[in-house]
Image (tube, rainbow, N blue to C red):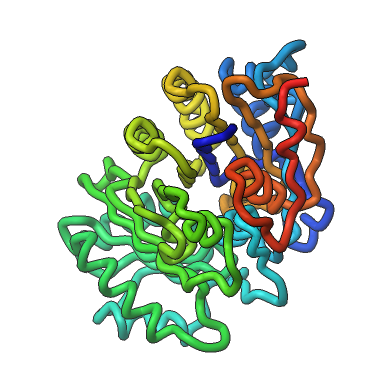
Length: 385
């Protein structure tokens, strides 16, 4: 009987372009393969034991004969390639329709509403990343006080401020107001507040993050679990992407290391239910992305040591981010699916799943909850033969 499940959703963990990637400008994207090639191979012994080498041919990562985990890939049927689309599809609420994209940057009317809500002019407005914006305009922000604003090219607006200029709590309040004012057609679906610290030339990212997103339109895995009296913990960005709905409690954490350490702490105190942790491979350069992945690989054994019979750990991605390409934003890719736990099967190929909703359906199945509207459970494949 399964009692506890941990799902680690790593934004940027791509495993090859989806068939429709060209429609998103992402033909040929392959995050893990290209990052590994760029750094001369990845050192991921823990991911190897889970079966990552069977998911893709990644330089430095072996395809082990007897992996302890079950392995496969998830595809996305939702429109989009960001963490909102990815995690919501996993939770059984795929996003459909012609969703607004900001491929050329934020529209002028959106920028005007942001400036009104923030109470001052802003710097930026084009497609960029947190790292690029802070490196390019952080000093100007410190001297002028103007918040940094950009988009990932999708339907998200990012706002960043130095903690000495605008403390995180105040920044979040202003971004909440911006969400209210930016309602209607063409408005961003998500506004993300970022805080950073440090001096010009040595800025420290990850001082704080808050995703402000509208509630999902349909019933999600988290709603079903919550209604079934299961404990549902959100760590990092997970709860924010559902506006907190269906979660027992949320634990904010900004960096991948902080998300993982919070996951360990919460797991030790949670007797049953689901822990869903969302973390982001944020760096813009292959070497930095590789460093984050290898650090996570070193940390994973600490989680596995806490597992007992009745526990499952599933590791996957929310979208790709092939940072070897000129644009550093999310890419339309498959993501790995790695599943392990005491007394579960090992070395089983789960294949390429046609929708990420299969993972949510499997969680619901394993925790003996009602069936979700989307997805097919692979729980039976996890049972030892």
